[in-house]
Amino acid sequence: MIGVLCDENETEIAEEFFELFKTPWEFFNSSRSYDVILSTSGKIPENSAKLVIVFSSRHIPYDDSKGSKIEPGNSNCSIVTENFKLPVYGRLSYIVGQGLPIFPARANPGTVATIYSEPGRNIIRVGYDLFQEISILLTNGQPVENASIPSIELHIALIRDWIINQGIALIEIPPIPLGYQFFTCLTHDVDFAGIRRHFFDHTMWGFIYRGLVGSLLSFLKKKITRARLMRNWIAVAKLPFVYLRISDDFWEDFDKYTEIDIGNGSTYFLIPYKNQTGASIAGIKQKRRAVRYDIGDIKKQITHLKKMRAEIGLHGIDSWHSTEKGMQELARMVETTGQRETGNRVHWLFYDHQSPSKLEQAGFDYDATLGYNEAIGFKNGTTQVFQPLGVSHLLEIPLNIQDTALFFPGRMALSEAEAQRLCGNLLDTILKYQGVLTLSWHERSLVPERLWGEFYVKLLQELQSNHAWIGSAHQVVNWFRQRRSVIFEEASLSGSKFSLKIKGNDSICEPQHFFRLYPPQSNDMSGDVKERYYYDVPLSCESNIEILLTGDWEAC
Ligand SMILES: [Zn+2]
Image 1 (cartoon, protein in one colour):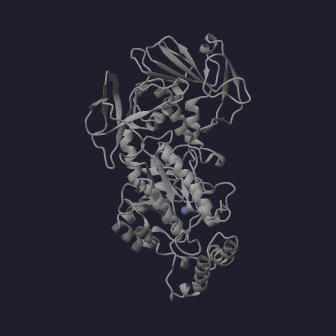
Image 2: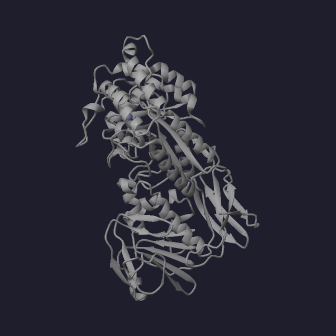
Image 3: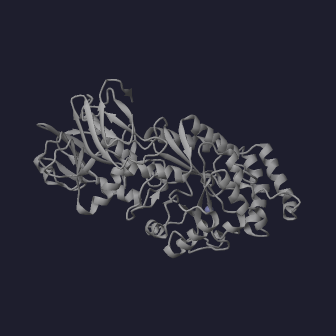
């Protein structure tokens, strides 16, 4: 059990941090004993804890007792080691003095973290403010240049390593189902639903230009094949026949994703009202945000999607800034689809600090907006579904890989080989840190002039072959909601018996949750892990759990 000692204004952030690092913990109580104390208040209580981890960028009285000095570093710097780069967005300080340095600084005599050995316990003193970092990441997110870094997962991994390296047992519920390496969530934003709805407008001219000239330039740069160039030229030549209704509208059959998507279903985000630009954000050309269809125009596709057990979500126009408009958009969705529990992803990913509370008040179950338009990666530094600060029910499922971010001219405009490499890096990260990788492939990306379907199919196969559990946003969010509902009441190790008392696990769902238990293991105090092992135990409806450490473990 970890005892957490923090300031009053950090309690909500601490609670959310320990939903992501799902391990037994409680706010520090001086009458209880702990294996580990995590302090961000600057106080180090006398306790039987074998390890105390102290995060603070400021000088604290304990530094004087060790004869250490605290030297402020610049804000917005990173901790860089052989194994990782961790950006620090708030204050970062260097500790100059005795102790065993964990992250020695290159151009500074100090270290960002150091270990002091005391009789019966070790103290790890860290020169940044953990919960402030988590708060910045969950609210402001990370700049594009750090998109690939799962910062929150790195903070969790550091604490996990420090605890295990001190020979202390640790149990947690990992953010993956038993038997899988990670989740993949499949989503499709439907922005057009037919090219016939676009006659002599910027969308039609854009299609013709990109189909003829853009494709030719891509072919000359060897970004696309001759066959793909020809498909686009033929599609442009056919366009008059589409408008004359002699040929089919190739942007209309977006429900063909139901044949391509593998796994347990996917989510389609649909627009509630046509011809509405919605509220503006400074610096963005708002006029083009209006969409030419609304949910009432595509009932045939909705019937098919429902028959194929796909999930339908709202592609909100104004839900991000107005509770009243969010309620209207949600009501339109419920009335057309008959689906009551609904998530939201805002069109063009509009969002601000008030959005979580507005969306929750409007009645949404989850939001799926937080991602980059111009990059792929982890905007909020986490690979997990999280609860934004200030709300009590709404969960956020971050968006990681968006097709238009990868390929669209003016965004990253990558070749397929470059995109494959970048997605491969993200896959490596998710395999290491676990959690969920959410894809957004737009409804017109399978057909001319984009033709990004082959890439999508290959990406899905790659994710599946790496043991992803694949499903819709609602399914993944529900799984994380169930994990959040589990509360650890007691956790203790006596001899070779680990005992655990939990509650909230009476309605656990598929795919199965599990515990991962790291028994006490002998590692080098400097963090040089010699051998690490763990037990995986399926989570059942039992509230009193006993795990016998038999020696039959999995090596990490
Ligand atoms: Zn959209």
